[in-house]
Image 1 (cartoon, rainbow, N blue to C red):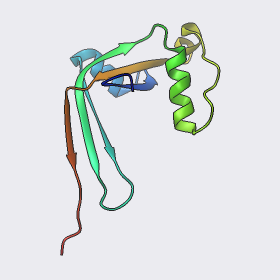
Image 2 (cartoon, helix red, strand yellow):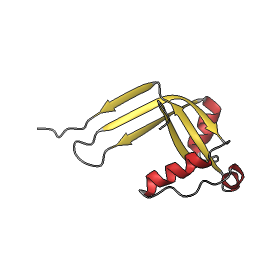
Image 3 (spheres, rainbow, N blue to C red):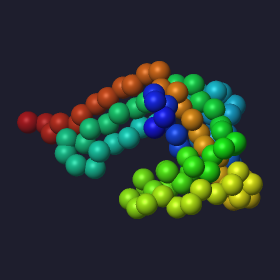
Image 4 (cartoon, rainbow, N blue to C red):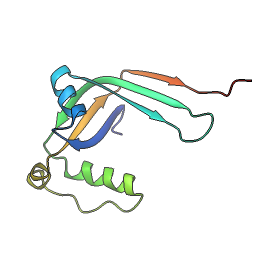
Amino acid sequence: MDGDAILISTESKRLKARAASETGWASICVVGSAKPYPAATLEGPATIVTERIGPITAAIVGRVTESDPPAPQSDEELAAVDRVILRIDVERVYSATYLEET
């Protein structure tokens, strides 16, 4: 997170990055793994960030691996492995909870 923005590390060739580049819009849905399976979809204007992404990428890796973030890589090192940041400036949030039928 960066304020009201969601930051996602991905490869530029992935569909989500290509679609965001083409449309300028993206969404992400997050679903809980336990009952009642809460879900939230967040959407808004999206951009692909390729500069000064080392610290952001390292922080994301730390969150995903639940460990200390690694040392940040340079933009050149990240470009060599096709890493970019998909930034979604959240404008809309939808949520749902899936309850059992009684």
